[in-house]
Image (cartoon, rainbow, N blue to C red; front, side, top):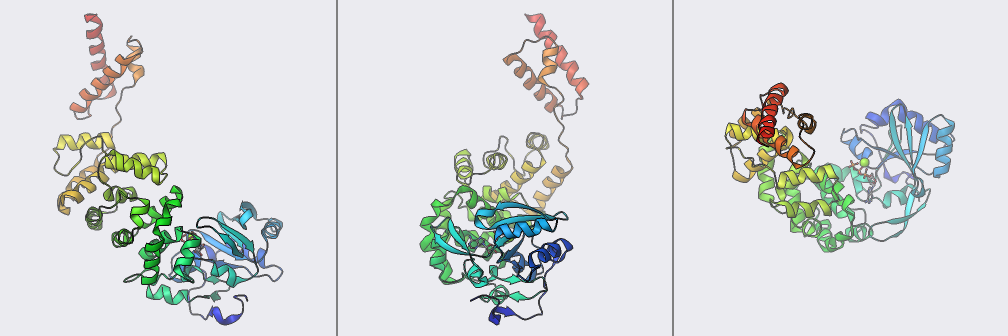
Length: 422
Ligand code: ATP
Ligand code: MG
């Protein structure tokens, strides 16, 4: 049976293709695929988003054509195409500065909780059935005809994240779906989540440690960027999901306090949300970064937030504030200030004052380098670093005002003094 057999077609009115899906680049790609009467449709997240009037960043297209035929046609029509995942049926078309992932219709042959072995099919319904949630299984023709085989439109309207088929079975096929469930509940859900799905997540959570850190990272960072992150993280803790993947990330009251402050003073870096959930100190943060396989830059940022090299809180003296800003840079300083305010329950007005200062402060780079010390005749070695550090202290104590020239004069004085002593 194929989805083309009418029952799953939802009649208009609905918005039809929008954004990138409605542009000339998409039209070119679609025309190339459909040239000899075959079907091609937009599918998955981009269709769901279009129905909500949101322009999706990534546009997926599905077709019954096999991948080599997709490549051949697009190339023939002068469209650049890259075999990004050709062994599982996906190629990427690039035209007019836009990109589209085109995937041949598939069905699962074998699943093991992490990877699936797939076979190509010409059945739209088979392809829809291997997707995770009802509202992620919809497809849309370029003419605006919507296919909704599992009632995704209704579930989207009522804010119900519903697995296609039995939640437990679908999670057993791919454990990542537990995190996707919470992410979509945070984004589209209304009220309490589906009790069956929630129970299945709790039962299957012990399988989660088999997930790769990268996949956990991707989903967790998306969850922690949602407006409803606090409520959803609490649900994840109640289900035992957090204990399986990020056992240190449990400080809900602090995340809630940070969230309330952000409503008033503006967003923090998503990494600050993770930091809010963690105990302070290096060890939990380092372990969490390792479990999530964070990039070096993100790991360093998380460590800076959980174990800052300088103490930051809203009651610092002006001098210490400037010192911290100078040392940490305005972004880290701002996030640390928010985190400290969340811990202490600082009123937002007080925080706003400190933040306003941070926003106007420009970090001045320390004007001297090791080379300046060497040029004055000091031999390479630990002494260079000692002199530089002392100079940085001198410069900081003068409110970072001395210019490079002033610093060089003072450095020369110190070096001469030292040489005279020897
Ligand atoms: P986003 O808006 O974050 O991109 P998305 O739903 O588009 O969300 P993608 O990861 O881009 O998510 O996947 C595109 C589509 O592929 C989904 O809408 C869904 O139909 C299907 N899909 C992705 N991951 C899974 C999965 N783990 N199990 C089943 N189907 C999936
Ligand atoms: Mg997507």
